[in-house]
Image (cartoon, rainbow, N blue to C red; front, top):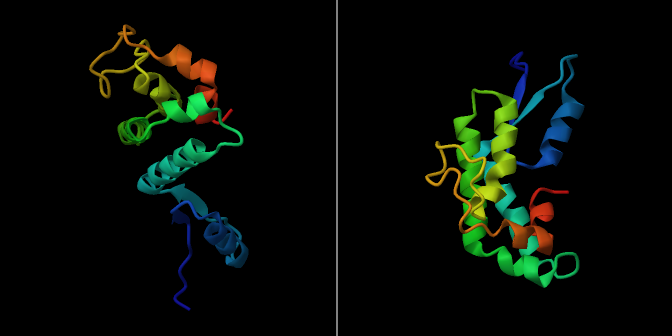
Length: 142
C-alpha cells in the first residue's frame, strides 16, 4: 500500500506477533527482531515470580531465597548491564548478566564498579546457600 519495508521489529516478548510478521512479509529479506529492554526486564521478573510459585520443580529453600527484594535486585542489575553495554561488547554484556545473581547474593568477586559499590567483597556472600538450594541454576536457566 505505502511501499514500506520492515527491516526491524521492536518486540515486547510476544513471539506470536513476530512469527506472524515473518509469515506475511512478501519480500526476500527477513525482518530482524529487536527485544525492547523494558519488556525483557519485565519478562525476566515474570519468570522469576513463576519460579517463586513453582512448588513442583523448585525446592522450598530456593523459593524462600527468591524474595520479592531479590527479584527486584536481579531485575535492576540486568537493566544496568543492558543499559551500560547497549553499544558495547556483547561478551561483556553476557558476563555482566551472568554475574547478576552473584552480585545480588553478595558475591562481588567479579563485579564492576559501574553497578557495584562493594567490588571484591565476599564477607556477606550467600552464594553457597543459593547454589546448594538449586536456585542459582534455576535463575541461570540451566
